[in-house]
Structure formats: C-alpha cells, structure tokens
Image (cartoon, rainbow, N blue to C red; front, side, top):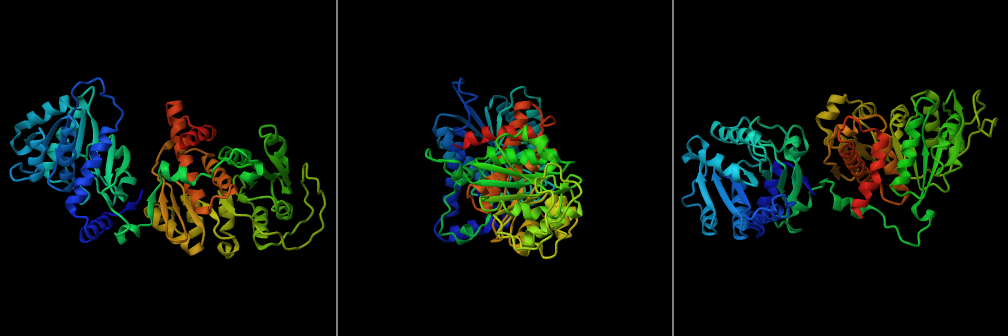
Length: 545
C-alpha cells in the first residue's frame, strides 16, 4: 500500500485526469470499491432479512464516493439512505442516480433537531462517514461539527451501534498531521482511496481509523507521479511475497545459519530471545556467540542452538573475542550483533576489532568455561563479515567508533529505538520523534544502511529512498525484550537470503502482528511479555501461508 501526503494525492489525481482517467471515473471506481469493501464485511447482520445502510454525505468528493457506493448497494437490495450535509439534492446527478435506484434522501438543513437522522441511525446496520475529505482545516465549521457531534452522541448511547465505515478518512481528521477534531466519529473501518494518507498513521487519528483498507481507483503506470511514490505501508500480501519458499526437499543448510553475538551477565535473556526468534522465523541453524559464563544458564533452555563461547571480562564480551567470533564467519549467512551487550569499553573494542578486521586477543582474568584460556596477543585480518544486523547496546557502542558507517558491509540493518537513534545521530529524541520518517530516510541515505526506527508505527528506511511504515501502534510491544525478538526475526530472515530492506520490513511486520496476537490471546496489552510475542510468531506466519 502506498503512503502519500494530501498534496501528493492531489497531484496524482490531477495527472491521472490529464492522462485520461477523469475525476468522474476515479469517483465511480472509488464508490464501487467502497461498496465491495462493505459487502465483504463479516456478516454480523446475516440473519437480517433487510440490511440497512445510512450514508452521511458531505459536499465534496468523499460525499460523491459515498453516493456512488450507496447506489451500488441499493441496486444489490440494501435499504440505503443518504443524509446530505451542506449538499442539496436538487440538480445533483449522483443524488438523482441514487434515487432512481430506490434510495432515500434527507437534507440536514431540513431535518430539525436531527429527528430523521436519529431514526435512520437507530435501524442502520452500517454507517458511512463521507462528510469531510482529506483537505479539511481545523477547527471544523459549526454546522458540520454539530452534525458529527450529534451522530457521535447517538452512537455512544446505542447498545448495538452500526458498523462505522469512514470514506477515505474519518471526518475531522487532518490527513497530514494526524490531528483530529473532538467531533470526529471513530471508525471501525476506513476505506482510503488509492493510497494511505500520512496522517492516518499518526496519533490521535490512528486511534479513530479502525481497520484500514485501500480502494483501487484505477491508477496505472501511466501516472508518473503515482509510480514515483516510494513510501509504503506494509500489509499481509507484501509480507507473504517476501517470505522465502520452503521446498519439501530442503535441509537445514537451505535456510542458512544465523550467528548471534549477544548477551552479558546482566542481560542474559536478550540472547535467548533473539536466538529463538531467528529459529521461529525459519533459519536452518542458529549459532549463539555469548560470553562464556552465560552458556550454563542458556544451553539448557535452548538445546537447538550451537554455541561459540567468547572471552569476557567480568561477564561482558572482551576485546579479544573478535578473533574467536571471526573464525565462525565461514558458515554464517547473517550476523546479529548487540542484544544485551551492555556498554562497557571492552565490548566497544570487540566491535571495533571486528569491523576493522583486527583481532586483538589477550589473556583475560575471567574466562569461565572458555577453552582457549591463554592466547598470544596478535593482530591479523579477519574473514569477511557476513550480512549484518546491529541492535540495542551494539548501536550505542557503534556510535563511539569513528567512521562506523563506512566499516559496515553495506547494506547492514540498524534497529534503533528513538533513544538509540539520538545517540547515533546527535539529534534529540524529540527531534527524532517529530519527523520519524524524514530522520530515518535522511540517515539511511547518509550512512548507506537500512534503518529500522522502532516505536509506534515503526519506520523502515532504505538508502535508495524507499520507506515503509508498519501500521501498528500498541502498548503490547512496549516491554523489555521485544526489541530482541525483532532483531532475531530480522537476522533469521537475512540468514535465509532475504535482502536487507525486505528482511527488515517483514521482520518488523511479523513482530508487530505477533504483539497484537499476544495481546488478544491474553485479553490485555498490560500482561504481554517478550516471550508472549515470540510465542505468537508461528500464528502470524501460519496466516501468511
């Protein structure tokens, strides 16, 4: 699904009209697709002999889309009513077509105290909100605000309110900023035309949008401004197309080896969550490279993994561990660095040695379980790095290394939350959050790597200017360890040969959906743990098959 600003959408429609797809054609296509979307809803009203729909019809294009949809539904036998707001019935061709199909029309200007409106709401199974479009300016004008407020109040008092479908956007939403009028009617479903509007994925508008689907209005590759849109919103079809095939004759080597350098004595669980996630998303083999003291705690919980025990200093990875890890690059098809590292200098030196190709190993005072108890100090070139994913404390340490972005094999995947993005960029967290997509794109291009800016509506940005937003914001994912699950999903996909950008998009979408699935299973977002998100991954994948 493409993601556009209001100005972009206007330019696209203008170009389409100039190239033979008229505004009237686009409206007819939009209305027809809107009718189809409603007809495909779960039949919560299937036992009803007479299905009723009420459309709130404004004066603009959204009102026109609504009238076209109502006309199609009336033709299919629905009892359809149009409530015209700042729109006169006389002389309106779309209204006349609707009346000819047996529809009923009421003009708000003639409906004193909203008597007809309340009566129609009381019997409607579905309500179209087609009052205002994407070009509104807040605050709303009084006459429109009064109608929306009356509808909202009536819906709040109903035991079984109609299913609310917003046409293009809920009326009262600023489709660029995401601001919303107090009178905005919350939608159960928003059918947006051609592309998702930026503001629908920002708060508070996102909380008023409900489920989101896109209606095809007939745009083709002939419209250059349409084809030039590089912003997208991830959806199920996109992710299903990314996931690698799993042939029946496959063996573990078919699906690659994820090598995961993670953990410290203070953050043991991060390594486990990342490793399990890489397996759950389909990697053939997961090799865990952890500080040696962690092995005893982790091995019993993770029998499927193989292990590389790294030199350590008081339970954190030491500088000399680069030499040991590099010896395991030959079979690794992707490498994750960072979950649970801590931010000690010795671990920063480990990362720097790894990236510069210098393995500096020296005797350490504390190497529990490490077989190479004493190693001569040496400097040598390590083997080529596998495709990289950097996460968590690994990013904070990376930021301390001069010219770090040039040392990573491109494109690496970087998975910062806003705080880590602040450390990497020097921007404040507030600056990062104020322009999430812009910041992610700017630095993806500057660094030459894929950036996954985590948080509500996670943004994935590519060096080539593409970006994808994950259309999920949920407190279910606001819990320690969920980022480790995400990093594991991404490296697991990279290990299977999925390219960096696609792996980041798919991993982030699966992660977000798993958070929602976990919350639904538990009945609350408050109780979701990172392990619950991990446990829900197979359910999400099964829905994609």
